[in-house]
Image 1 (cartoon, rainbow, N blue to C red):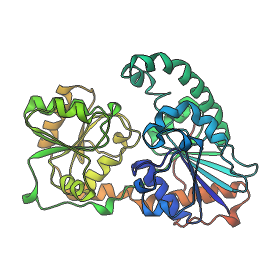
Image 2 (image 1 turned 60 degrees about the vertical axis):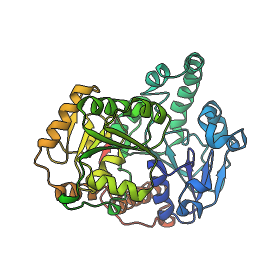
Image 3 (image 1 turned 90 degrees about the vertical axis):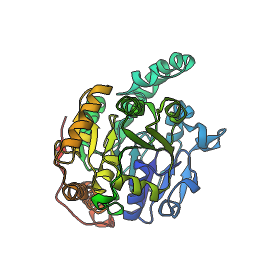
Image 4 (image 1 turned 120 degrees about the vertical axis):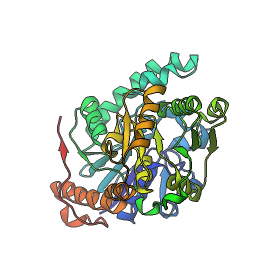
Length: 384
């Protein structure tokens, strides 16, 4: 069976790219299709595959300006030639699923989220952008939204990365989906003895507006507690200007530094609403509790009063209250580590492999699909 993997862009190694990496392990002969490809920014596993880019990669400064070309991406996807492929796996959160699959091929979409900037977070993005973009966004988003909904019909089977995303698939596409959580490299993290714990809380991730990092900085400025912030992103200069003397903005850090801070923080602060949220699972795998906003994927991974606490309004006082409740909680690091282990990579490969084999089997190609992975019972199906 000839397999194509379609991803929106390959310019770093975040959660979506970790899914691609796991799919590459499952299908070592698969070809990858994407809009923009920066080889030095991705793993050796991904680089081992043949990668084909759309015409977006030929436009000026594609590695930096690719998001500006969003209105062109539907047309760019439809020009990718997938003739000869039997199985197409698209990875969706930017435009990826809108390829034209060959007749007779099976198209499975692993959805991190329907495009946030045109669906559930359209108004958030619009109110925080420049005047010119605010004028352009409504007509352009209307066009992309219509194309996105129509192109959902080109997908045979949807897989959602969380029940939160499954609900969005119901709302925006009216499509059934199967929930398979993304792979988290839990084995790379672990706890340290209590004597090695630090006196700071931690916030990790790309510093962008929808993740609400400024909320955590404001809260820790007010409380005078120590906060360490790790990660790059467009808001980094703004956060550095906002940070008081107890808040350290470290920016992007090597993996070893991330492991060190995860294991020694008093707790992870997670102020945004995420589709799934790999960062809280990494913190729990490090034996540390999570203080999370009580919406989105974090509600499916963090256990209130056991592995962390929630706050239910994105404001300073509710966040600080959750921090205090977390500090007073009877927390067991070993319980958190055991809980996080259920989200590991082998679990993802086993569930995804079983799902793909069954989906292809329903299409009459069961004897030709051989994903490298185990088998598990079929995951819960969410129906519209």
